[in-house]
Amino acid sequence: MKKKIDEEYVNSEVSKIEDGDLDMVMKNKEEIDKKFAGTGLKKYAEMGKIMFGMLKDYKKGEFKQVPWFSIAAVVFAMLYIFNPLDIVPDFIPGLGYVDDFAIFTIVLRFIETDLHAYLDWKIDEAKS
Image 1: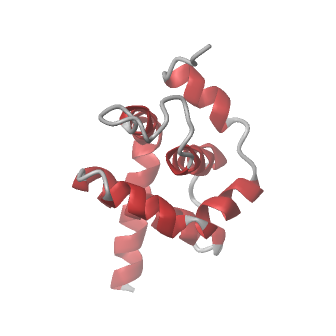
Image 2: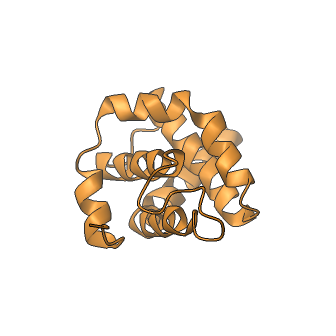
Image 3: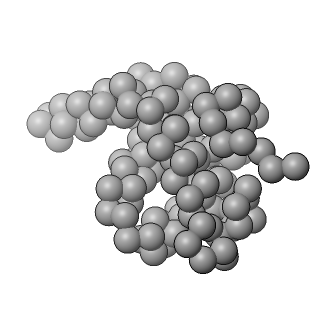
């Protein structure tokens, strides 16, 4: 039975994310970046870079002003995008990335405020 991609599904999956999942995302950054780049959607690729930056700074202990839920949501989205055999397999022409972008969009809505706080922090850090 296919799972319905909606906020409830994302919430339930985000609650399962652990520290080891963050490590897995960071180890596979290049592969995830390639998936973003291959889509031709610059906005998603740029947002993905910002999210990776936030994960990296969180992992290094430099940016801790973010709730675990936001970190877990980003990790979930990245793992979902990395997985080629998700709800709609990526090899299906024209449809393979639709579910990936649906998950990514829902996660963006969840973490928008924290992402803005991270960008503000990065600007302040650059000024220092």
